Image (cartoon, rainbow, N blue to C red; front, side, top):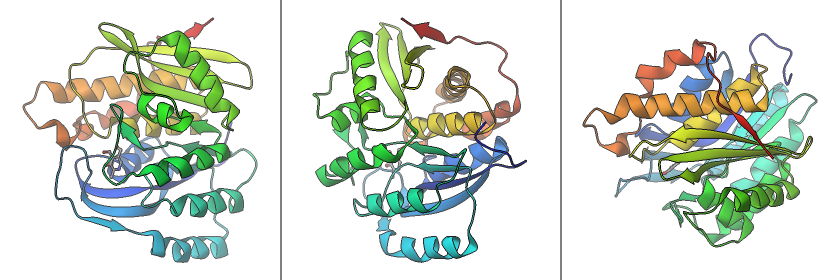
Length: 291
Ligand code: PXL
């Protein structure tokens, strides 16, 4: 158990993109629905996320963060989790590291989603300096959740959309050597019709896999949804493979609820239609242990 309070509290360090269902606009409803109090620290304000939109307005909030954090330090706020995602500038990495150090306490979960890119390319506002700094930040995390593009960036390896499970087992171990005890990599190709989530826990040396059925569509924000469910699930006391199951099932359900409608993918998945499912117990489990 990471928490002893009736309502665990998580600091959520992500951007606020107004339109498009990503980052804080999915992190907050998901964690709230899972019974977690969210304390948002917005890293940037955008009119939309950057996936599929051009001409978005971008306002970096780096100068605002120290004032907000100093007030929280004075208040001695106790966080059961620190959960970071998209950062507004490379300088924010040092601010987040200081945050993790200051608010560190026993039975606390530090989740870093190294939001850098997808499909082999970095997101619009993410440059080489951010990738470099993110390598430092993951050293302070208990859990990281890169997709295969982000895993490649963090390890300085070439991105390959057809990476094998065997190679990924080496990658997750190498990522864990950089600090995080648990490494969860999403969108690993499994077969022609499936992708997998592969996870490694250095503490017990075990690898886990959850396969996801093929859905022929890409929606921005699903990585944020996935990591938010993982965080909520672990804060509720689930073990790692069950948290993986919950997150994979929820993301799949959200995509399936959206796919049949003719709504542009860039608007994200129809989260509002599936959010209630987060309150239901997991009734089927599909995780496997990898040898
Ligand atoms: O979903 C990740 C993400 C977060 N924040 C911003 C983004 C994206 C992905 O496109 O653009 C601003």
